[in-house]
Amino acid sequence: MAFASRINQELGRYHVLELLGEGGMGEVYRARDEQLHRDVAIKTLRDGTASRTRLLREARAAAALNHPHICTIHEVCEAGGDSFIVMEFVQGRPLSSEVRARKAGRAGDPLRNPTGGCSHSGP
Image (cartoon, rainbow, N blue to C red; front, side):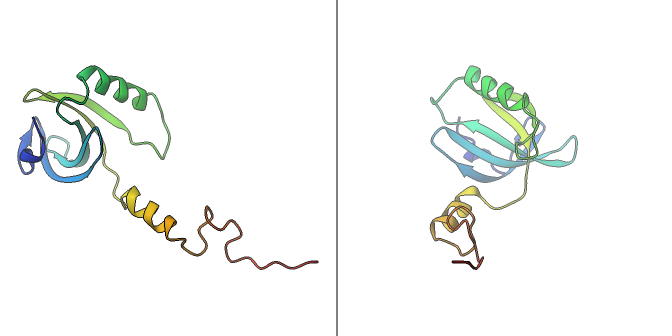
């Protein structure tokens, strides 16, 4: 089942609030954990894209990592016949906007201009 129809509805103990992003395999939503009173991100798979086994494998791989730049996996759930990963919600800009900014050649971008605004002195 597509999750888009679940915005503003309950999904287990989670209240789905908004679509954050989508890709070739699925969607990510912001939801409210009604039990713990916190916002979380919920990753779903598009219909027919992959199985619960693949979703569980992805969740286990991410859960095995501990790094400040990797979201914490809270659980893998099932509701209404759909499987989904519940993870830490991190407020910020979408990665796509950062990629667009870097493609535009922002001044001082260390990936585009490693010297930034440094002046060169010497022979």
